[in-house]
Every structure is written in C-alpha cells, then in structure tokens.
Length: 221
Image (cartoon, rainbow, N blue to C red; front, top):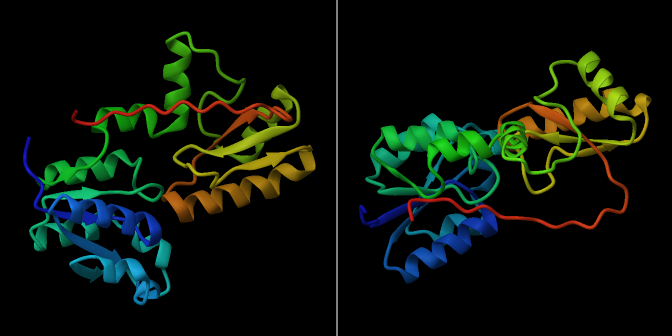
C-alpha cells in the first residue's frame, strides 16, 4: 500500500483537529482547508498548511466543492484525503475523483459508497439480503405528490430522511398530512446544504423505539 506522507482533511472544526492530531502522531504532514468564514477557526491553525476553498458567503458549500478540493490537493502534493464525517464522507463521486487524481481516499471503496452512501440503495441491498427493514419508500421521493402518496400508504407518523445524510441532518418527523409540505422542503434544504443533495426518502416512524446501531466498516484493509 502507498505510504501517506501528507494528508489533507476535507472537513472543519473538531473532526479535522482530531484527524490532524492522529496524523501528527504518525509522522504525517497535514493540510487544512477552510472557508472564508472559517479563516479564524482553530482547525486552520492546527495543520502544517492551510488553504482557502470556495467563495465568500458560501461556507458550507466550500467543503462540498469536489473539484476545488482535489485540485488543491494535487497542487500541494497531497498523498491522501481524509473526509472526516458529514460533508463528502459518503460521497462516491468524491472518492472516485480522488482515485482518478492518484490520491488515496481514506475511507471505503467507491463501490461500497455507491451501495451504502445512498441510504435508499442501502435499504434495497439489505432487503435483498434478507435483512428486515422498516416500511418505507423504495427510492428518493420525486415530488410533494409522491411524498404524500407514500406517507398515506405508510400511515402517519412518518420520518423524512436525507438519502446521503448522517448525524441527524436532513431528518424530520411528520405526524400529519398538513405538516408534510413544510417538513419536506426543510429536510431537502438542510440536506442540500450539508451533503450537496436534495434526495430524501420516507420511512415509517416508530414512537419510543429502542435504537440499536450497527456500524459497517470497509476500507483497503
């Protein structure tokens, strides 16, 4: 496996700082990226090098700019990019762009991200494997009318979920038909801002459920 001498973290704040600390302990040189609005943020000063990305007035979109981030990494001889969590961490296009540029993507293979980074694809994969899943839409909703029909079929309350999201972003509990239009617009807007995608799907919402989370890890090891 190619050794990593210089690592760029395509993220901000605490997660970037944690990765920088681990990278420094492993003897790697580190590179931060920052939006104009983050020019005084601590993560910028914890890396060996730091570079501005994106446009002023678009702080979150800056961390979703695949082309600019990969170009910056190539220009500064970066060996690998760590996406952190959120933003581009589950984006197959980002992992693919890193590979085409000859840069290691510190995370799952493109094929895994295509299957699991999109939660509608992950639901389909789980269902085909015989794993029980909550009743929900087989794909992202295409319109408000589509969402209303799906929710009526499932019965309220339902949960709207960002297909490319995580960490609770782009999620809304909807208890009545009247709440759905506003909740859908809000979930799509938050998903677009946080993950660069408006794709949202619907699942049946379970009240007072006990939550058991399973983490699937897949990288070059």
